[in-house]
Image (cartoon, rainbow, N blue to C red; front, top):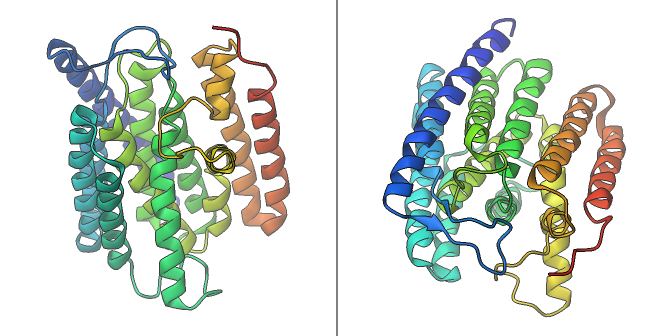
Length: 335
């Protein structure tokens, strides 16, 4: 594994540079074509901004993962996942332009998740053999489907998705480097995800010059979910659970709160904790920066879990509670 980190560093820098360059080109073209996200009462931004950064981020990440898979002899099964992500990206681009129904979107995501699970090796059990194989696949599929949607729900302010991609990617890379010497391809794939997030941040940090759009958040959420489940199946289930813990908590608590009020949970809204923090007067940079800091704490907990096991869940939970408490510590300003 001594060669993993230097190789991963090259991948992070290369993918970041390619993503930034591609995003700049896409941003210029979207602006030329007037494909803009116009502010409305649910928006967290105030000026029309190009939407469709995923047209740059997703292809760069797919090509990087394909190259890594081919180099490590895993091109066939990984190609299924990448093809499904590409199809999701195409469907989501149509949704960005025409607003598809929730049923069509969810149906496409279900097919993509089913294809991804079928490509998993039969002995790759996400829940570490605690469940019968069929139940393991069913629960993993439901969790993956939820992760795709929560990643999309959480893409609501400048910088937040790039921060989360970088956190999952760097955390996955370091977890593999420390605790799973037999799966270097996973570490390199995680490095590519981190690079894509960092490269996109160069144009998406506040004030954002471009938004990811569903064409980015949906396939990136799908690929991030695959990476987390692959880490879990490789024995790194604690890092796979800890690294996205803030996203999981914010999205799930918000959905449960809205469902308890009888609201249509699939409708767009501004009730996530990070959105409430912006509505209360904190800047996008402050909120995304705080989430980045919290994710750094979760990364430390993820690495600690490789030494102390499930005990690391307690400080990880404390990090998430503290972050959510800070985000919700001020009442929204009056309109």
